[in-house]
Structure formats: C-alpha cells, structure tokens
Image (tube, rainbow, N blue to C red; front, side, top):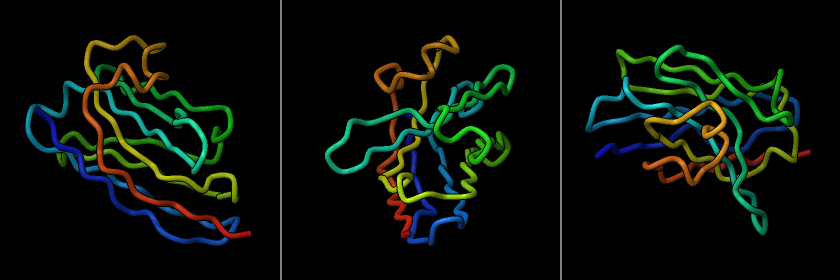
Length: 126
C-alpha cells in the first residue's frame, strides 16, 4: 500500500504561481512512477504531468508544457508540481497518483495508476 497526501492548492490570480506537493508513505516510493491529473467540474479527469521512477524522464500535457514542472525527491518521498503562468482554465481539483510497471505511454492514463491522493483544489481567477 502507498498512501498519498496532496497539498498546496489555493486561489491565485491569472499569471500567478502555485506549487503542489504530494507526500507518499507506505511502500517504497522510489519504485513508483508518479503522475498529476486534474478534474474540473463537469469535465473528465485529464492528465497533467508524470515522472518516471527509473530514469526521471518527464511527460507533460500540451496544455501545460512550458508552464508546469514536475519533480520528485526520493529521499523525502515527495513529488511536486510547480505551476507558473496559471490560467483560469487551469482551475480544477488536482490529484497525484502512483503506479508501477508502466510504460511512458501508460503514464498518460489514470486507469493505469494504482494509488491516488485525495486531491487539492486550484482556483485561478481572471
């Protein structure tokens, strides 16, 4: 079992920044690929970013590329999502997720992840 706790959400003006954090406990964090997903009201959950456990390679949704950065600290069992140049359309509940034995393609799909955080709300005002 891996327990994930998301934090760092809040209300920010367009153009501002937020840093989300996901703290993991339980089984060995280092062996899990980590992803961030988001879900806005009335919309389906969508992929935001992911980072592999084996080589640290990252993947981003086109909508956040160049603005968001995912990183992990294996010593602290945390993964972060630095969000810059935020837009109103970034407003959503953000979830971190952990999965193992995933190809880079698999990282894009929430159904491939086994463990999920509780979510943290990000609201960007215009």
